[in-house]
Length: 288
Ligand SMILES: [Zn+2]
Image 1 (cartoon, helix red, strand yellow):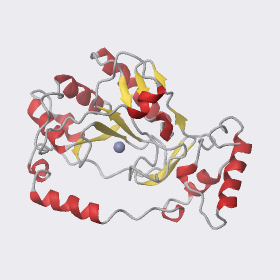
Image 2 (tube, protein in one colour; image 1 turned 180 degrees about the horizontal axis):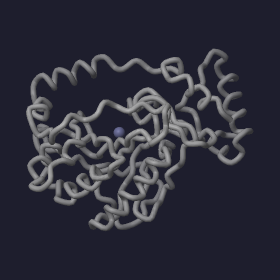
Image 3 (cartoon, protein in one colour; image 1 turned 120 degrees about the vertical axis):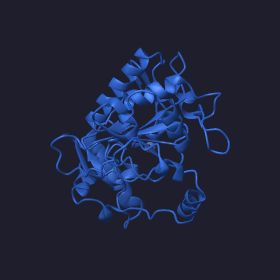
Image 4 (cartoon, helix red, strand yellow; image 1 turned 135 degrees about the horizontal axis):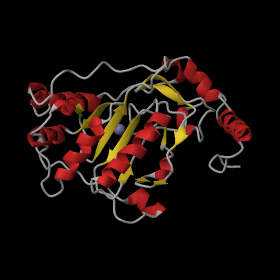
């Protein structure tokens, strides 16, 4: 039995999975990257965004009334129920603003945790990548969801958005997303933040939540606060006061920022193991 065909019979599947690990490598640690289905409820976000896991995850359906999940073969469309509810609400709001729904990228793995590729965070089921490429008016077939490319909104040189693709609809979508009280911050490319700073003529408070970061030129990375009452979830320190359209933003266009990026690329982050995560993540990993 393959793990992929193993969604319904949880207990049996878990033993197949564990046996597979033991059989292939007696010393191998089970790995969040090979988990194919969530641990049992209740939903629990454990630890920090870049050092945690997720119990009782919920899968975002591949097709919603106003969204389509991209790269479904990665099996990373799992989240805390708060995140799933947020995507439902944001995609509905986006549709009301004229978007043909949203294309949704990675959320979390079935049990959250560190990924083998792609993200440092997205570990607690509270992070979501949402494409800034407008969705087509049709339902994409599975194959296209794997191959369709997102479009960069940042012009060559990285200083500004690309006028061919950047629209007022992007400003409206980001403003709407930041307006949800459960949204803690949204990472975008510095050039996108710069464009938002220039575009907003009204209430600028929402701009505080828009945080510049490398990459993020094709999607926004939305991060929710820890769900109310979940004591095992660790929040990040709050975003600085003010709209952030200041020297802090300009730093991202400096030689120093370029050097910092080069340094980070030269020293990739150490791979996390179960020992690096909160103790409760072991139970999430080993649950049937
Ligand atoms: Zn992300």
